[in-house]
Length: 144
Image 1 (cartoon, rainbow, N blue to C red):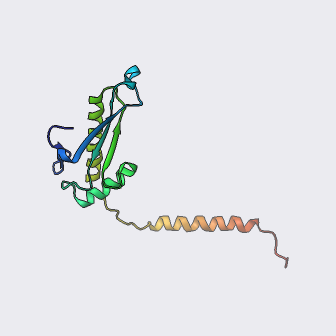
Image 2: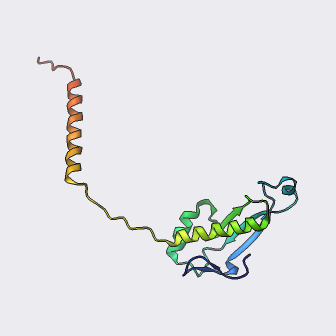
């Protein structure tokens, strides 16, 4: 675990009590070492209980986290790509910080736009042309 608070953005700082780490045997690289040493890191962040995250940031974080969000409101990150536990710890923390930083950015509001007159005319002209092609495929009427 980090020694002190983890700075995510200028406004968001994570306290050490919000983070917990556990270790497991990794399935990735490591040779014979992989069967003996617990190099994989499972980083758990108590996001729902965090006083440092605004409710809208928590909601965006939950959506971004997907399956990594638990029922009790924790965000769990697994890191086992490196051979050493220290590098896996750094990677897990970096991925957590990146995820929270992305959740902290509010989405750009959509401004509804109208189609241009030219595009409306082109669309209607294309529909009429298609209708004429289909009309030409029909056989002669019974009257003829």
